[in-house]
Image (cartoon, rainbow, N blue to C red; front, side):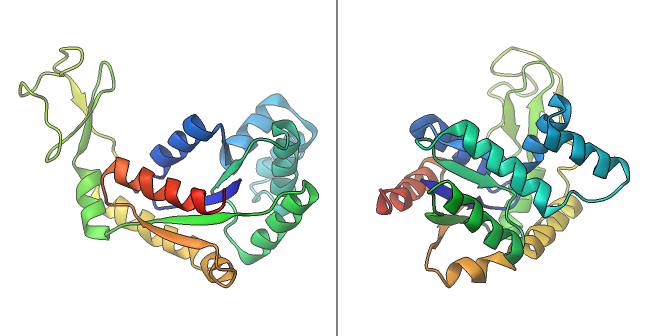
Length: 217
């Protein structure tokens, strides 16, 4: 099975993708990570991409398509794919159809995790973690049992990500809407988009996603 999983930063997309990888043996294909790996490994596509980036230019759709094609070859036909960060335009969506067809695959589902922007701001800006072990906490939903002391390792040092602020979160939301707006009508017309409440409990979201996948099993 091949799916696109959509959702703005903080919607829980990474968590749900990790569960799909664990439960179904699917492969999460992040174009950004594939590009960095190809450049580091100095593959033919990676060398070409490095030259483009060195000139300060954006990597072409042709290069991204080559990365995806190579990854699908390496995965083999039995492994499902979760596309992350691609496609972002109708042209890329059409290219993805062609790439999948070349591997006797098709796109089965586009799953979008819907969020309430104000609630998402509260969710993200309240996050902090233990500086020692990385255990995650939240100002409202998960404070340490002993104030100022990490439940997991006993450290008293905590940190917040600099970009976990309201202005940045709202900018990310606007950017997400801008990037997904072009492709959703394309897939809606094919009847393969399902929208899931990304603000629900993590387990409930997983159950909904699994229910979507079961429809195509």
